[in-house]
Amino acid sequence: MSEVSEERIRANLAAFERRPAPDAAGLRRAAVTVCVLRGREPYLIVIRRAPRGRNAGQWALPGGVLDPGEQAADGALRELAEETSLTGVEVAGLLDDFVTDSGFVITPVVAFGGTQRAVADPREVAAVHEIPLERLLAPGVPRWRGRLLQMPLGPSIVIHAPTGAILWQFAEVCLRGRPQRVYGLAQPSWTRT
Image (cartoon, rainbow, N blue to C red; front, side, top):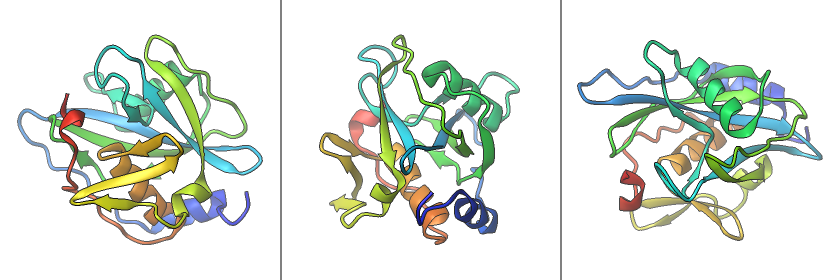
């Protein structure tokens, strides 16, 4: 897996002290999967939401609202399978919860999916994009526009918080071994729908 290995990601994640969000009235729970796959080089997937429904057209990690009583990892993997057909993935650990301006607590689940390929469910996902892990470490990633974090990950892929914040924390914690916190990063107004 080049310089970015599964073993390195696991070791860095194991050394990270995750911070869950405290329970608060009115917050809804959700989970996403940062799914690392193997191809010519290791990569993760991001999706572009379908042009209708919640967060229409936005860049995201596969995921969604947890069912009542569902644990974050179970919900993240359920959503991953529903949206991208990826199954049998192995959970490596969790990153910090991210509290959104729209009233969600998102738990990011880091997982490994081997060599399988994602297939978008057109009811929920307009497109699946493969992002080489090395791209997360490239100069200029992240970049800042005032208080807004941007993750420029491709010619037409610029991702903001909350997804951009989760990807930045994944890059810092899992790839670089740095204990980066992303709680409270500014979110663009259009992510609040």
